[in-house]
Amino acid sequence: MANYRRMDVDQVGDVTVVRFRDQKIVEDISIQELGAEMFHLVEVENRDKLLLNFSGVDFLSSAALGKLITLDKKVKAQGGVLKLSNIRPEIYEVFTITRLNRPVRHQGRRGGRLGVLLAETTRTLQRRFSSGGEADATKIF
Image (cartoon, rainbow, N blue to C red; front, side, top):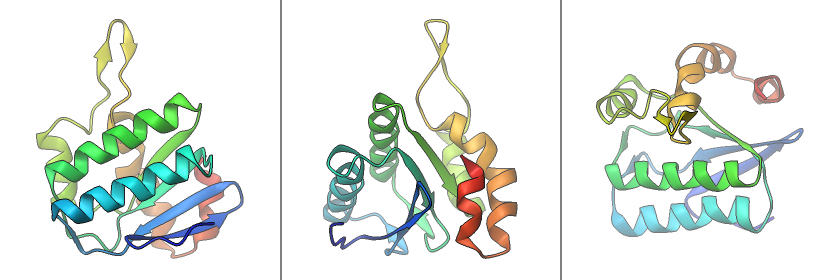
């Protein structure tokens, strides 16, 4: 397993749980590094079940949202699943404003953007993780 500068990575069963180290994900260089690290999980380490834990994140820029969309596409291209948890209301509001909280219909199919993931996140995942244990991560997938 690689050493990561922008995130902590734990393996819980077959689920890779990612916690972000930065409280505010806004600086371009940080976003580029974070993107490269997340993409490494999928492209090099072949992780196909990712749970991104946003509990330590207070702010997320639109450029960071772009990285999440790209990550979602990469995970799905490998037949995997990407889910998000512990999203603060302020960050979820950005997802709502940008319409990333809704499934997108594209040519008769659901789009790959983050909407499908967020629908479950706001209710189910936050309840499951409010008890604190990452052992619950395996029940999400």
